Each structure stands twice: as C-alpha cells, then as structure tokens.
Amino acid sequence: MRRGDRTLRKIVEKDRFQTLGDLRKQWTESGVETSRATVYRRVQEMGYRCRIPQVKPLLNQKQRQKRLTWATEKQHWTVAQWSKVLFSDESNFCMSFGNQGARVWRKTGEREMSKCLKSSVKYPQSVMVWGAMSAAGVGPLCFIKGRVNAASYQEILEHFMLPSADKLYGDEDFIFQHDLAPAHSAKTTVKWFTHHGITVLNWPANSPDLNPIENLWDIVKRKLRDARPNTLDELKAAIEASWASITPQQCHRLIASMPRRIEAVISAKGFPTKY
Image 1 (cartoon, helix red, strand yellow):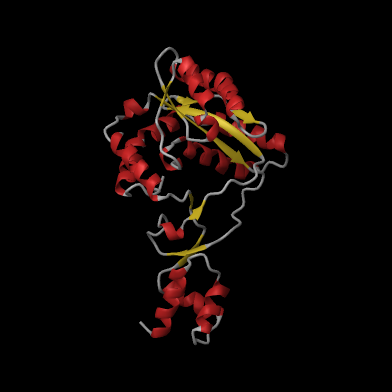
Image 2: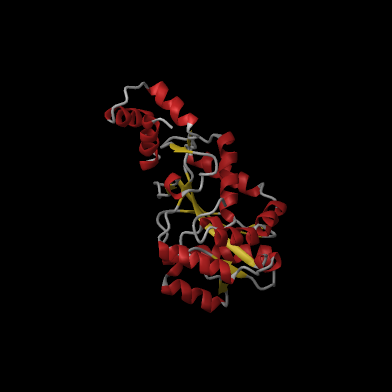
C-alpha cells in the first residue's frame, strides 16, 4: 500500500464520523494534494462505505459484565419460559421520520463495532407511548402526558399493565419485565408490585437488544413512514392503528428469538448485539 494511502486509512480509523471534507483536509495537511473525488474513491477502494450508523447505548465495563452474567443465568430458559414474560417499554414517536444526522465510514461486518455506533440520546418527544407484549399478542397502548414519575407510572401499571396481563394471561401466572428507569425502580413502585403479588424479572441496564418489544416499536415506526401524519392527533391515530395490526404470530416469533438473543450477548461478551 502506498504511504499516502496508509496515512488516509489512519485518518479514517481515528474517527469514523468525519465528513469527506474533513478527510480531504487532513490528508492534504499530511502532504497529499488531492480532490474530494479522489478521497472518496480511495476510501471506497479500502472497503469503507458511508452508512447511517446504528444507534446503540454505550456500555461501560460494569454494564457489559452485568449483561453477560444475566445472559449466562438465563441461557437455558426455554421459549415456554419466555412466554410467561410480559415485556413492556416506553417509546417516543416524532412527527418526522427522516434519516437526518451523522454518517459513518465502515466496512462490511463492522455495523456493530463500538467505534461505528452512535450513542442513543433522548430527543424531545412528540408523543410518548407505553405498551406491553407477550407471546400471545399486544396489550392496550397508553399515551403518556408529561414526564413519567413513580406515581404516574403506577397509574399506567394499574390502568394499562393489569388489563394487558388479563388479556394475554387470564388467570395464569406471569412475570413482568421493565427496564431500570428511575420511575420503575422507585421504592413505591417496588411496593406496588409486592402488594399486587407480581414477580418482576431482573433486568440489566441499557439492554434494548434483549427486549423484543423494541422490534414492535420498529414495525410501528416503519408503518408510520407510509402514513405521514401531519398533526399530533393523526400521529396518535396512526400509532394506534399500526399497533392494533400487530399479530399474535409476530409476537410469538419475537418471543421465540429470546434464546438466540441470549446467545448473542454471551458471544459478544456483553457488548450490544444485532438485535
């Protein structure tokens, strides 16, 4: 490889989120007179493609270790056991579903590499929604007003989670899953579950890839791109319609993926996975 190309590779590897202009500027500063077209051609020849980055939470070593420990503990859970879990989550839905934002230079197979990931941040929401799902289907959606605190979360549990459990499990026992958001972990919320005799699944922090309901949110968001709502009421109606169209078969397939998700976390040593 020519010396100039080695320099360009180092520049790309230093920060995968640089623009073509940034790359050209640094390569020129290293002594190579070049055009943007040449830079683009050379990085393509090296195997880099300009892609929209995967958005994943950045995990520290302690969080990775907890994910790995959790996955190892659940390694032998069957699909029947996972079918006993009522998965839940909140999600933000915005009016715009465009692909604005940073691009990343990466090669084939590097999609999940930490230096090619964009860390997920909470954007100001247009509509925030709570939902739950099991292998048998989805429960009723809750549109959330304002910030979720322990008291408002317990209202959601009372008026939406319990009806979801009744619909999906009837009189059968179930295990409830939610993430480690402050409202979920509050002492009064823990007391609420104890009072109602509901078992809560222990859950590792920053692990959306382990929660199959995240895939349902993706399905809903994809359908909304076609709906193109213009007002908040239209957005809510489109979300409701899209959620209602999710079939029990789709939900069962997602629950059946849990053993594979567990294996993926173990293989990745706790790092984020493709899920």
